[in-house]
Amino acid sequence: MGGLLQRKRRYSSSSSVVLLPLFWAFFLAIFLERSVDIVSGLEYSKDKQASSLTLERIQKHLDKINKPAVMTIEPDGDIIDCIDKWKQPAFDYPLLKNHKLQLVPPEMPRVRRMKEEEVKGDKHTSSRKNEERVVISGRGAWQVWHQNRTRCPKGTVPIRRTTVDDVLRAKSLYDFGKKQPRMALARHTVSPDDVNAKGHEYAIASSSPSEAVYGASATINLWNPSVQVEAEMSISQIWVLAGSFEGSDLNSVEAGWHVLPNLYGDKSTRLFVYWTADGYQSTGCYNTLCPGFVQVDKEIVVGTAIAPVSTISGKLYESNIFIWKDPKTGNWWLGYGNNIAVGYWPSNLFTHLAANATLVEWGGEVFNSKPNGAHTSTQMGSGRFAQEGNGKASYFRNLGLVDSNNDINPPQSTSTRADNSNCYSINLLNNNDWGTHFFYGGPGFNPNCP
Image (cartoon, rainbow, N blue to C red; front, side, top):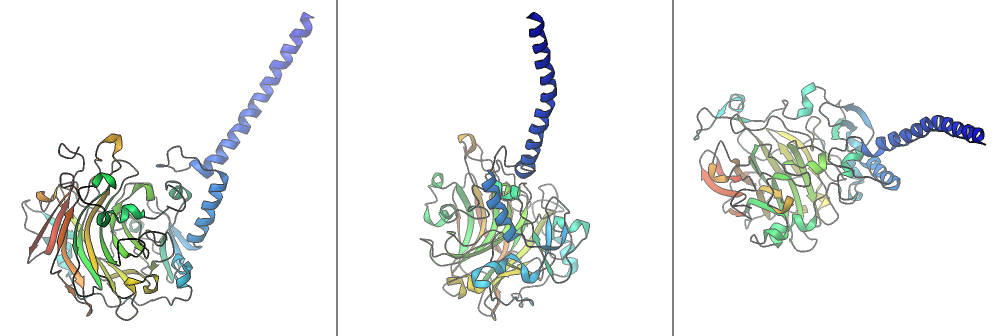
C-alpha cells in the first residue's frame, strides 16, 4: 500500500512537471496577445483595459479617419501618413460629399511682409540685454517631423495618424478629440469669480466690433508650459466666433498651440485647429480627428510638435497665425508663419460663420483638475505672470481683425478677462512696434493661488 501511494505521488509530481510549462506557455501567449491590442504604448492610459468589443469599435472608427497612405513618415514618435488630397477625412462629412477642393489658396489678408534679414534676427528692446526674438515664418524645420527632411509626394497631404492608444486615453470614443460643451463655453456662461464651478481658467483679450468680422490675426509667443497631470492642458489660441453662447447656437473656428497629454500621449507643444457649428455639442473636433478641416499644404501638419520654443534664459520664438474668410468662396482659411496657407474650414460647415464672425478672442486657457485638492501647478504661457513683461511672460502681439476688404486692422475696442489673477494674469498694452498686444500667463499653484 505504501509503495502504491509512493508511485501515485511520483506520478502526480511528474505530471506537474509536464503540465506546468504548458500552463505558463498558454498564459504567456494570452498575455502577449492582449498586450499587443491593449497595453502597447499606453504612456498615459495607465492600467486602463478595454474589452474586445470596445477595441473593435475603436478600430472601426480608426479605419474611417486613417485613410490609406501613399507614403508613411515616422520621424519623431508621431506617424505622418501622406494621403491622397481628394480622399482625406474632411470629405466624409455629409455636407462635403460634393465639395470642390480649393487647390489655390486665396490672397492672405494684407499685412506687412517681413524681410529675410528681419526674420533671422529681429531685435526687440526689453529689460533683458541682448534678447533675440526669432520669428518662425518660413518652411524650415519648425515642426519636429521636418527634421529628417522627408516630405509627402505631389498630390498628397500630410495627416497625423491616430492610434488605438490615442483613443483609449479619452473618456470614451464619443468624447475623443472633442472639447466638452460645459467647459468650452464656461468663460461666457460662468462668472469669473466662480472658477471652482468649471475647472477651466482663462486669461484672454476680446473684441466685438459693430462691423462684421472676416478673420483675426496675431503673432504668438511659443512656449512649452508644464502640465501637472495628464488630464489637464495648457492652450494659447485665437477664437473666431459667431452666434450665441447659450444652447447649441455657437459657431467657432480656432487655432494656436497647446500642450494636451490626453490627446497625444506626450507633453510637446503642438500646432492645432478646432471647429464647432453647434456650441461644442456634436459637431467639430481637434485637427483632422473628424471630417471638417481640409488640409491643403503638404508640409505643415496640424497636431504635430513645434520646435524650437522659447526659454526664459534663451531666445524667444514666435509665429504668426491668421484665420480669415476667403471673399470669393466663403471658406475660412488658416495661415501660419509667413504666407503659408495650411488649409480651410468649408463655409457650408457653419450657420452664422457662413456669413461672418461677430467676436474674436485671443489668449490662454488651462484646465485645473485640482490634483490632491489644491490648485494645479499647470502653467499658462511661459509660466510667468503678465506683470513680468517681455523676456519672461508670454505674449500675443499685433492683434488684428480682418475687414470686408481683406485688410487687417487693429481692434478699436479690446477688453480683457482673467478668471483668477492670482493664478494667471493678463496685461493689455499698445505701442507703435507691437500695436495692440498683451502679456499673459502664470504658474498656477503658488502661495496666493492655493
